[in-house]
Amino acid sequence: MAQKEFHQDIINSVSIGKRLLAILIDPEKMKLENASNFLSKVNDTIATHIFVGGSTVDEHDTGLLVSEIKKHTSLPIFLFPGDVTQITDKADVLLFLSLISGRNPEYLIGKHVEAVSKLKHTNLEVIPTGYILIENGKETSVQTVTNTKPMPRTDVQQIIDTAKAGELLGMKLIYLEAGSGALHSVSSEIVSQVKANISIPLIVGGGIKTKKQLENAYDSGADMVVIGTAFEENEDFFLELQKTDKSAPTKTYYVKSNI
Ligand code: 1GP
Image (cartoon, rainbow, N blue to C red; front, side, top):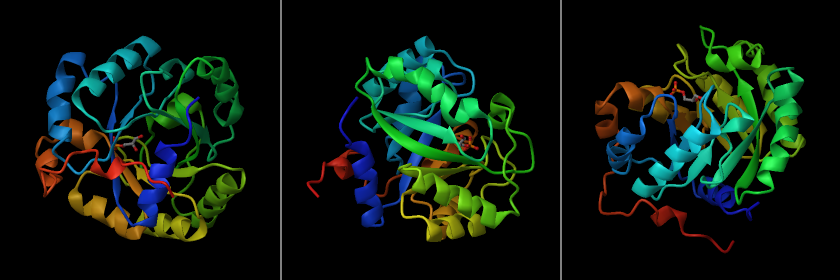
């Protein structure tokens, strides 16, 4: 397993107030032959990371797609796996997600134990991440696949305590997830309250479809925002999120710090 490099980059970004944007690519929805065109549009946006993952994808498909993505972008590729089968050493980072909003032991620790023998043979940087699913108005695939209940949106204190417990357990990131295609993204109140109570970087995703919602998430305290569906469904979204200085190489900000 690799040295901590990409996690440190996130910490460095947070320390200078840099807003991070991950574009989520689902191998089930992205055909290999479309990756080049998709990535050329991504490279012109303010995106800083690529996440790859889905609910039901196999290793072979994930590996092929990650290799293809790498040909077309220098952005770091984080695996955001729905299952152990999606772990591939072609990526840079594995978000080692523990679904701390739920009480299904398989998604709290079981899958992780299964993953270890596979990880021995990879160079992936593994980042332990507390994954918190929040109710969004409809059932999401995370809920179905993991057989867990999301946390009620109204139970802000319980969400804060869950995030803090994740930090105290040693997790390096907290991810507040409304679920892909969520009707309601995670509320500003939840984002700001969680941010105020943890000292590790905060990722927010699910149901963010407009630039205004994106900015609202950052203004509330999200350090990184994850968007998938809006890029799949709305070509114009790439234009809305275009870099203002297109001459800047995508990797400028990823120069490794010596801090
Ligand atoms: C889902 O948070 C991500 O895991 C992204 O959600 O597809 O709704 O952008 P969307």
